[in-house]
Image 1 (cartoon, each protein chain N blue to C red):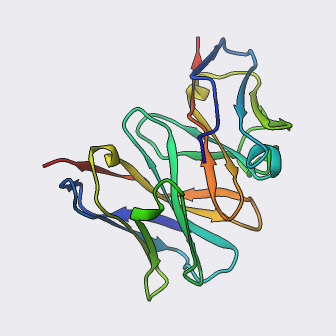
Image 2 (image 1 turned 45 degrees about the vertical axis):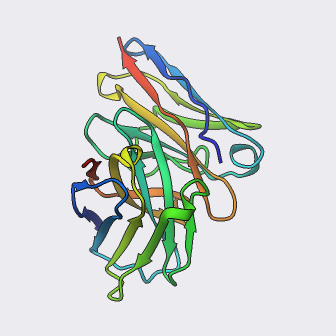
Length: 121
Length: 110
């Protein structure tokens, strides 16, 4: 069974770049049938789609974050990464990585456990 | 791309039914059949409950059902149980390989 696991610093200073990685176990990013995404949830708030990447490395971003976001696939196809630049306190959130199934369930069917990132000096 | 609109909270007694609405636009909910619903318990990751408006993944009880009319999708939970108390989020494809979530609804089982 495929599993996702986020990792990265839990504390980032304002104006710096937030960097997270999502490790894929029990499968890989090679299939055309899925998109691999990042979703965040600020404390006490709702879910916000940040962006997604497909097996070929094509990326798709939330228009409101597009200027600051970079998502990429690792060379081993066993991980993908998120970079969010020029962070502020508003970027404090739990960050989830998730798989979007484009053929069977047309939904984010598998999620990581999430990692809390706090932006503070 | 604006968040889909959900009621902040709904409640019901055990055994009753509740419906949570999710209102979008013709660019998202109204224009596509890719609406999904997620259940989130405190401190946990979201769990897929409904996809393609009304389909249930294996393992999800048939007490959970979904529907859509125009730009509003709905999640209905019948035969409420204590463990259904959670936050629920809708999500819709919004075109050009982008997705948008709702603001979330807190379900309280009285």
